[in-house]
Each structure stands twice: as structure tokens, then as C-alpha cells.
Length: 182
Image 1 (spheres, rainbow, N blue to C red):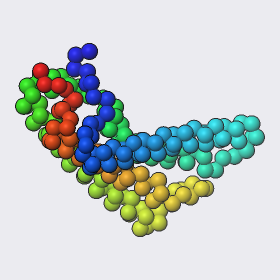
Image 2 (cartoon, rainbow, N blue to C red):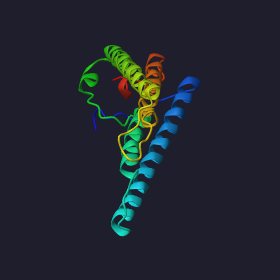
Image 3 (cartoon, helix red, strand yellow):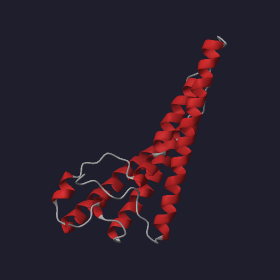
Image 4 (spheres, rainbow, N blue to C red):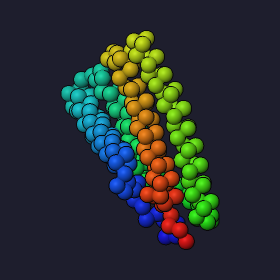
């Protein structure tokens, strides 16, 4: 298919920083997958308790919600590493290699800035919950800094992967938008 990127994952070359970030993003992906598996297991356990044993569930629904949200946030850098996001490359395809490179640097730089802002406010929110000792308003009463920690961790790891992508494009290790010069 025209415009289909031949690059399936971020290129690292022999750059130790890029390889390190790729390893961290892969680890984050495995952690995210583990959280999804745990959420599915807890959901199955909850169904068994409620409908087979006719018992009540106290913590399961809340735990599943926190696990799925955390899996989404912690999985962000892995999706970026795999280039699994949805993209429309109509403009990059229409550009010559020079302007395409400029556009890639610009969009990656803008993404870095936006994610850095989200990291800043995510950390501030997490720290506020930790400092104030917030607890959920449920019977379980989980300390909210625990699930909220996924916000700064997820955005911090995504920021690291975006910086690595920017370095790879600037150094020529990776082609802008994964498109070969034509």
C-alpha cells in the first residue's frame, strides 16, 4: 500500500540511548500486558464470587478500573515504540525529503512539549493526592496516590520514547515518518 511504513518499530541503530529507551518501552509494554491479564483474572473472579457463590465484591471493580487505566498509560511508550498509533501520512507523502524532515522534527518537538506539560501536571496531581493522603470513597478505600502514580510514570516514559524518536530522526538513524526518500 502506498505510504505504508516499512518500519514496524523504532530504529535504534547502535545508539546506546535509543537501545536503552527501546528496552524500557518494551518493559513498559510487558507491564501493561500483565495489568490487562490481571484485570481479566480479577473480573473472572468477581463474576464467580457474585453469580456462583452469591457473595459481594468489595475491591474487584475498583481494582479492574485502576488496572485498565494504568495499563493504558504505562503502555503508551510501547505503542509509540511499535508505531502502533493511528497516523495519516498524506502531508508527509506529498513533501520532498527536506521539508518532510523539518515536519517530522517539528511534530516530534511539539509532541515532546505537549507530553512534558501533561507529565508536569500529572506529577502535580499525583503528588497532591499523595501529600493529602487521598483515599477512594469506597469500602476498599485505596490510597489514591497508588493508581494515580501511573499518570506521571506513563507520561514520563512516553516523553522518553518521544525524545528517543526525535534523536533518531535528527541523527538520521530513522527516516522521517518511516518513509523512504523518493
